[in-house]
Length: 289
Ligand code: SAM
Image 1: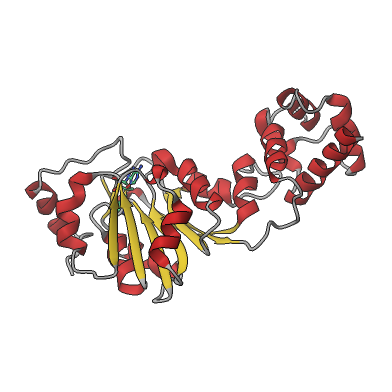
Image 2 (image 1 turned 180 degrees about the vertical axis):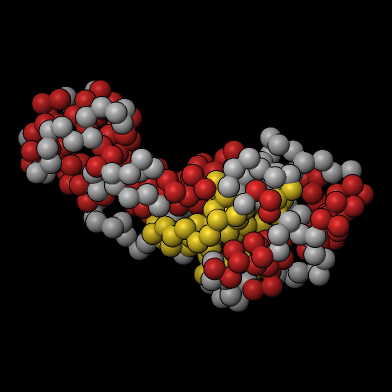
């Protein structure tokens, strides 16, 4: 197997194909073999797994996934990489590469078609410029057992944040609705070519069977969460009433907070997942009454 993380191998191979890194496509390729190995291992990939990889690049993680998984389906948005991937991962019979934008794929249909009875997982060193839309699509697809990805460290911290901390955000609550996150390890810029400006982290999201507490109306729940964080320096009453003007006013939010035993001066960032679920329910009750 070609060691694509060895820059003595990688650089001449890229040069031979006239390949230049595209910043716009988020191309920072791994040059430290322990990283793709650890991602594949800690994602729990084995022969019962069907793995969707996003952005194989020249294939360091693809190789490690193919060595372990029942099947790997990799979606790559840069067709210039085709002749290189033919050389680096062309021998794996359990690999299928799809060319195109991952954000344009019907992910649940793809998973159903490609993986059959295998346990579906997503695994990737993500292109950072579209981290949030990709994670949103992977979680909303509701078809993976786990999503293990490398992202910017600050994004990983945001996903795994606890209430009341500066990293806690609407995206935290969104991710934790679908999955239980665990930050696995950090990866310094020196592990990539070209080196990015930021430190990266690998995070594993174990997808939940159901949200941490029942949520009656998920669409309204997420509106309330986004509204609560829309102006995070303001009190929840002000942030929510100015974001959801068509739904509630200050009076109704105040009433709902009282019913939830939350203080009127509280900010959105203090609310736990369960608080948001209860607040949504109370707002709905007050609106309906
Ligand atoms: N997996 C390789 C590695 O670890 O060295 C490459 C990771 S690189 C950070 C991100 C990869 O995503 C690149 O190969 C890039 O071409 C690809 N990519 C960027 N935008 C994409 C998109 N919208 N859909 C699919 N792949 C995309």
